[in-house]
Length: 275
Image (cartoon, rainbow, N blue to C red):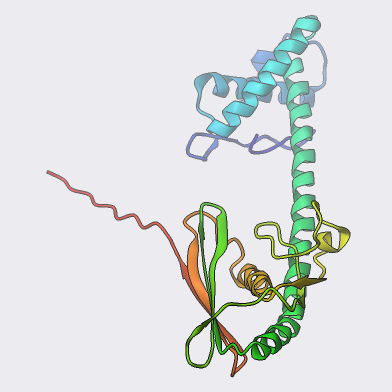
């Protein structure tokens, strides 16, 4: 349900537009239920009100689905123990469902907190690795006679990748980056884009804590890993939905890296005509 109840709190009901519905509590509906606990009977009367709105189909769709589940539970319980009033079975089922949803929400909030803290640690680690990785990369590129490197990337539909890495010398002639020597860079494991991390089939404890790994790569692999990490750092989830594309430009002489990032989006133009 949109709201839950306890022993004292009224249940705000809402119509299909989200507006609170006045509660004409009908105590006559529960007058035949044994007992002198007025508060308990008021709660049962509210259950009767919920069922009436459910039968009329005026509750929001998400609440209709929840009430359907509660009603099914109550019917099963009533079939086993028909001595109690159906509204009593319905109230117990309602409270059970409310407790389950409360636990689910607590679990979700805890997962969200853990994820958020991990993201914060990963962001801090990425910033920590930035300058050391740049120094290692540029030192390697200088030794290979590379003047510029262009890295093109693209992605959409939850999938993204580095498309091409082009290295050129001072005369703008393309240079093939060799397999050796390998260089050691710092990498972080991310969920949405794997940018190195530990070379295992599952994340290790360092990855889980958003820490850094020292891994050896070929120069082109190092460039790819570092660029993926920078993309995740400044445009996390860039490959989702319509995605994005762009390029990194490495200026070896000036030891700078420039990112050109183009984000795609869907535009809708709406027109209204009356004739």
